[in-house]
Image (cartoon, rainbow, N blue to C red):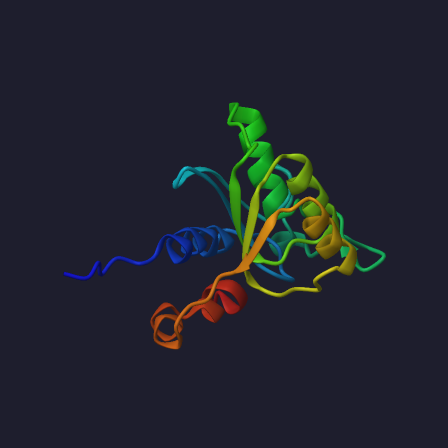
Length: 161
């Protein structure tokens, strides 16, 4: 009998999508799940420093076109590992959007061995070259259209209304 369960990549990506639904950024909801040995060790979403005001409350705090109030989902997940003592060396990350250059550098420095992403988002050429030079695997996770229709990812990640 064929296994009817969702494949691991889609399962962990859905965890990242669920985390994205907690985002407090008005511009883009992003979630990240760090996995080692098929076990989730941390998760994060983009938002303000704990206890500070959120973009959804007072709007984004933009400097040079970037919101400086927001901590990216990948960084929040890595910081959760640091706070609770979970090693990231050799782990994988599932992130809803391709990591920015700063997050890519942080992930590589943290020893992440594979980056799974759902959507392309301003994919930086230098980030791509760093990923290649460090021999970190990169995979865009795909969902069947019927799965997307059932899950309504755009509603979760973009509209939230």
